[in-house]
Length: 473
Ligand SMILES: Cc1cc2nc3c(=O)[nH]c(=O)nc-3n(C[C@H](O)[C@H](O)[C@H](O)COP(=O)(O)O)c2cc1C
Image 1 (cartoon, rainbow, N blue to C red):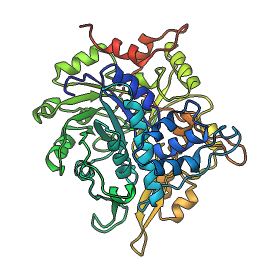
Image 2: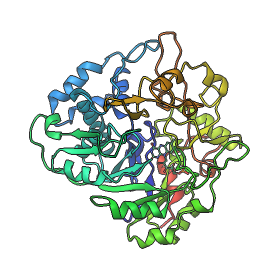
Image 3: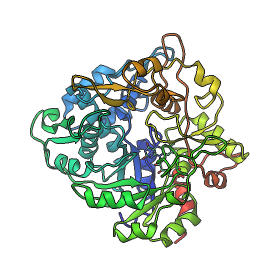
Image 4: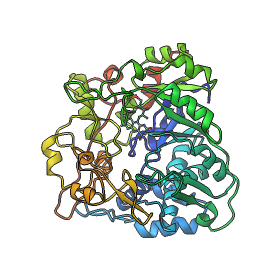
């Protein structure tokens, strides 16, 4: 792994799907599938009729044939659902997911990793967002059943993950302390995952994947290394120019004229301190160019984690028309990217590309009736009787406030769950014929895309990206 110079960053939802990760792994670099919302992506692919048979190929390899069959029976529509009909709804993942939902999470994550690993012996990773707490344990277990090699976790401080991985390797019950707003003291609400209950019997020992947290400072890196119960095997050090969510700036919030958070010297990562921790590390955020890879290596990094340039390559899960529009706009120097401090229900800054007929545009955003039906970014809060409730900052503000949320926290929030599903061609259609609109993210640095594509030939593959980044040996 230490010789892997390029990690293709995990990109949710479904942008770094099994096809992209597999293509990268075939080039001897680390391909990473996004583990976010795979249960939902998987059942929608089945409802589309699974045209190439990939989902069914993955299901056929799942160790418990009965469990795989019951999921197929529940969701598969052989001819595909009609375009104007909604996808069947699926239970949201709360802190006590039903056994059926846990099974679905295990199977969906298994299938994605299994497909990414097929036909080669390269390494495959999976990426999770720590903020999305409830699906993490069954998802991890499914990925590990398929032999995932590396687990990468961002958007939070994933101190609990290594010990969960260790328990799951041994087929033992794992626990996760749920973060609940307003709870007195910590650790009062636990998520429990028992692999034997889900698999219906004793579980075999599984190989332990490596664990790499994503950090945005040397302080956080040190906390992870010193305080984790269990092993940290490497670090991804990500700066604020990266695509997707960014860590908020340190210190007092300052905004520029566009309303974007301003990052300063306090946000610069001390790489010497990181190197002193003695772990391999990869730098992320505007490293998608050969010169940047060389700079990273010179600073002692094992390599770079790159997202944006891979997001628009042929094998990524993004809709084809979105890819070619963005690439062409890039070549014409017309792309506008905003680090939006409020769009994401997580409260973290989120980068959004301005594209017509997507939620980035105010007029289109205002046309959408605010509601929450997918629920991955909901926050847990404590009810007066001590139980846990769930609310989303992007839902109808009236409901958000009714459940104790502050109105100001709901302002400008966008439904990332539905928007990101639309990005990959799995948009929900509502009963009033409204189709959910995309919301596209990417990093600040688009030069690599400009150097790899032309107006006549805007397409490039992940192998082109790797050839471009790696020095000729
Ligand atoms: C479309 C897109 C989606 C992303 N989604 C995630 C994600 O789900 N989890 C995560 O940890 N990072 C995510 N990222 C960040 C990438 O994994 C990677 O660290 C980052 O893109 C590197 O910087 P770059 O964009 O300048 O290449 C995303 C990036 C992009 C472009």
